[in-house]
Image (cartoon, rainbow over all chains, first blue to last red; front, side, top):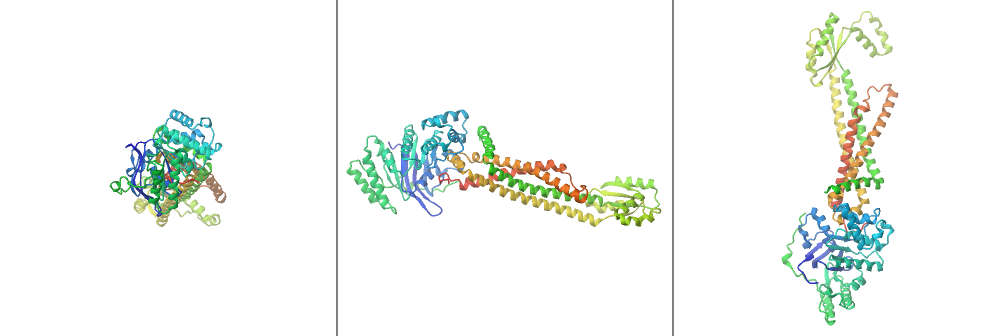
Length: 299
Length: 306
């Protein structure tokens, strides 16, 4: 992926601490370009959820700037949050389907919210269900479907308004492994049609096998990001790539308290020795102090 | 909001009442209980006021004519008084009628005591006067007194004062109790709706995630609250009617008359209208309050829903 000047999501020196004192993110800098597929990985409590909550503007950062599409979130008024949300499709780990609505109704629900017409709803829902391969289950209720199918319904719901990005929070967490691959396959398919996909997961095998960009968060910091490495996903020997990833993961796991730069250097060295070029960057803000105006969030 | 959306949300509001019928019954029941108390308070205060009015009407001013006045002259004077300022009614009472009333008021045992006066009735002709406005009591009495042929005026200033004080007290208490009950019902209803909202947080959560505006999320709840309020209003009017009939019957059994009772039909329509309006208002306001709190503080999109 070329580092186009057209980021879909950009974090600039973002800090987030909760009122109870938990420091969730510290000085996070990240760019996700239009059309990218990004896995966000990390142990639980590392800050992945906060990362997502910041993107959808459920939480606000204490410092730094987040840009999502055309929105500068520090300037986003509460009443404009719905507009932001309509640019994204969100997929949850627990599916969040409404049990007393059919598959069709569940997907249509997302369109009713934006005030779509009946004809549009009929057309788009059928289209979205077709993409996830569930057209024949339109009249079923969620309880009559398998976990994988339910998550596909949720995916159809996320897709139906044709969002610019899909944010998936552990979408494979509650489905069996084969289904998990199907889900990520689908996401990849959707990604190929131009939708940016950000998927939070802790399933390393999946991450390995799909070979998209991986952003790793530990202790509230991005400790690894193989941006630029995965452009040639198809050609790149996946096994090599992921073995390096494992090294980084291990070193990060060993140093839970404090991400140790030297460990990451080691990972880079391994990369070098495999003549793949240094791909892992320690979290170093490329646009430091200048952007950190410490803007207080207006509301 | 688009008309299309509103149409959809209206349908959702109505549908929600049925699909969450247990909570609907609970909310409407609570509201109904509150309005019933308001209604009972209303009926009581209405009846007391009515009773006071009746006593006031009877606590008449009696003007006695001079003994030697002819009956025609006395009747003419009665008519003269009737058209004076602040006079509501002025009825001629002949001396015979006056004696009969006196006897009636004494009860049967004592009535015999009056037998000896049948032949020589000591009472003069008189007229029974009620006033329009009791605030101008004193001036009116003075005016009556100065009419030619009027010998004495019998009046019950103290009773009149006490009654008007009683009536204003009842009114104040009534208003306070009703206001208090309204506040209580608002609190209870908004809490009940908060519970229904809790049972539906998944839907709200999804709506927020897919970009629903606060207005969109709020509307079905407000419609639901309003409808439940209206239903509760109609229901409580019905129940109040039954209770009122019951009270009337038992009053009639104990006192042999329903004379003091304000007939239900005379205030049924304003009662129903107020209940429907109050119910609708409290129901929708309760929804707005509780959903507002929910949308601002509790509606997290990502935290797991259990």
